[in-house]
Length: 282
Image (cartoon, rainbow, N blue to C red):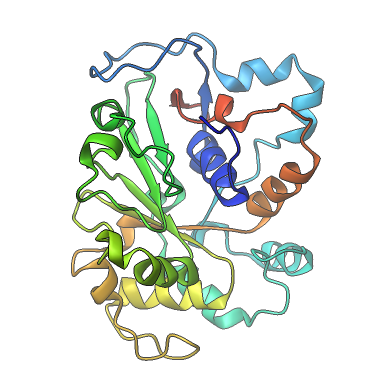
């Protein structure tokens, strides 16, 4: 199987590992399609990094992964306005961003997974849409994970045996979502994953992502920009509350983009991603 991955998939793999202050421990054992029994993580990533200066330089575990209202401050604005890259705030108007983040005002917006008193390993699968799983028969194995991340053209209908049916998180930019609905339509992708159990990760690459997210939370048409007049309910259904939406962007996204260009040959972000994830900062 081709081990190459797109930059966007690398970032989503890292998101699954570090999401909202969540970090993982790794395990070289083969994945099994049987439901995993809860077990303690024997090697939390936070502790493992302490003995590896090289990776300490690569990973700043204090950098938030998700943007939410509790982070909004003049200092954050000044910082992200100076960053380069598509997910910074450089050159963007302040009010649409600020008004969007103020709607993400609960602690649930700051974390991917709900709070739990039980410290246990959580197994995740990240499924892209490049077609390498076709004919693989991995559907049951994928669905056996606690959480399944899908992106962009998340085609499942007709390919359940290969890619499964479970969707916990759907990640996208407005641009990639709309392009996917067009490009993958012939494969049966007529709508993004919907339902009360699906959470949306808006990858804030530019202002239209903030505008769509704000409109989705408020249940109103997009007020301006290239998506003006769009009704988010058409894409996400009527049951997409604020606590089911997350905004990813800013310093963490810029940092992960830098790592993609500077990572040593052979370094595999998958080793940090999905085999076992647990909360480390609570």
